[in-house]
Structures are given as structure tokens and as C-alpha cells.
Amino acid sequence: MNLETTKEILFSEKLQDSDAQSNKFSNELRNKLAAIRREREDKYFPDEKFEEDGLLRDKVQEIAEFAQDHIQKVGEEQAVKDFQLGFNLLNKGTADSILPERQPLEEDGDFGEKTFATLTHLCKYYTPRVIMKYLRKGALTNAVFETKNDSEINTDELVCEICNNLNLGRPQ
Image: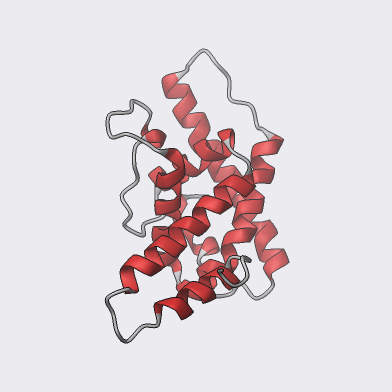
């Protein structure tokens, strides 16, 4: 499996059967994350062996299930931008960090290896609930700042829609 296959699964328009697709995506995402971590840890920590972490797998699966509705509603590129902003907010990375996964992501809508590595890194240190909170913040922040000056888009309505997509209910 490669990154393109993972992106195709994550952003497929055929996600009607969310349980089956979610399980398939989760398994493939776990495998890809494990391969990336093994590669990185072999490079930076050659004496330490990578161990599959069941907790990490569960976190990634929960986040993947959470993300599916948002991806379907706003599209792949916008969803990835939202998640990249959320990851940056949570990661508080600095440009001079020696760890690539701590460096700020370019919010370009490309679900590449850097975004993948950051997701893995965040899953290692945070609960899915915290990560999802920041993914929501990224989505809402992008919605407000990208539409606030566009008179053809009702920003309040868009924010409410995103809140519903991400299981937040109506904002107060």
C-alpha cells in the first residue's frame, strides 16, 4: 500500500457504507502509519525497535471515523486544509524543530507524508478527543476567515453546517 492508495480510500466518493469503509480505511491507514514510523525510527533511532501500538491504532481509527463526514461534505482539499490547520494549532510546531513532525505543516490541502507523520506524532501524545477538538477548530477557523468577506456566502450558515458535520450541534 502507498500514500496514493490511502488518499484514494480516505477521499473516495464511495463512502456510502461507512462502517465497512471505515474499517478498511483504518486498517490501511494503520499499516501506512506503521511503515512511516518504522522508517523514521530506523533512521533516527537505529538501536530501538518499533513496536505496533494497539492504542495508536485505536486512536487513528477513531479520528478516521470522525473525519469521514467532514471530508464528504467539504471535499478532500478543504478537509485536508482544515486538518492541517488543526494539527498546526495543536502541535505548536516551530520551524527550527529538528523533528519534521513538529514543524508547521504547509496548509496546502495535500495529504502527504508530512501530514501523515504529524498525525502519527499527535496520536502518540494526545487523546483522539483532543485531536478532534483541534480538527474542529481548524475547520471553523478556515470557514470564518475564508468566507467572511464574501457576500455570496453566509458564513454563519457555513459555521453551523460545519458544526453539524463535526458533531458539535449549533454554535452558541
